[in-house]
Image (cartoon, rainbow, N blue to C red; front, top):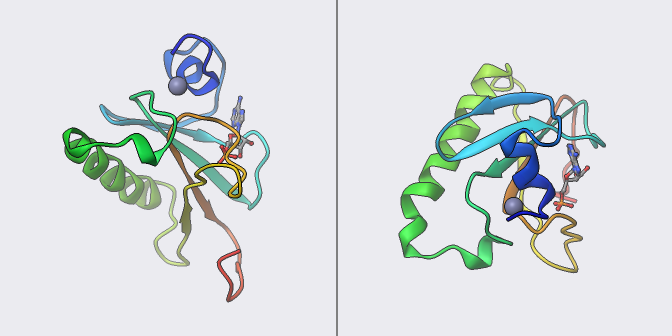
Length: 114
Ligand code: AMP
Ligand code: ZN
């Protein structure tokens, strides 16, 4: 999508600190990190949110999940662990309408999810 910031990052039209890339996703450091490690894993297919995934995207979804595990190993996050978050819609404060997951790590995140 031409005016989508994450599509532009994936195409290299906007600079990013790339962490990982495969056929399904492009991962980069979040510009405003909320933990010492904060990685955005953006789908290579432009869809506004998880609500737009269909049965046809099953392989795509699996690919992204596998990529998250690969990124965790690559970035040395397996010992202490990490959190994966997807924000969907208004209440969750989704700010970029292009499907993506946050990987957060690098410190104790407490007992609550948020
Ligand atoms: P969300 O609020 O779940 O839609 O997450 C969007 C995330 O993208 C936020 O954490 C932003 O800090 C991050 N972000 C926005 N623009 C950029 C950018 N140009 N480079 C890296 N991260 C970005
Ligand atoms: Zn997009």
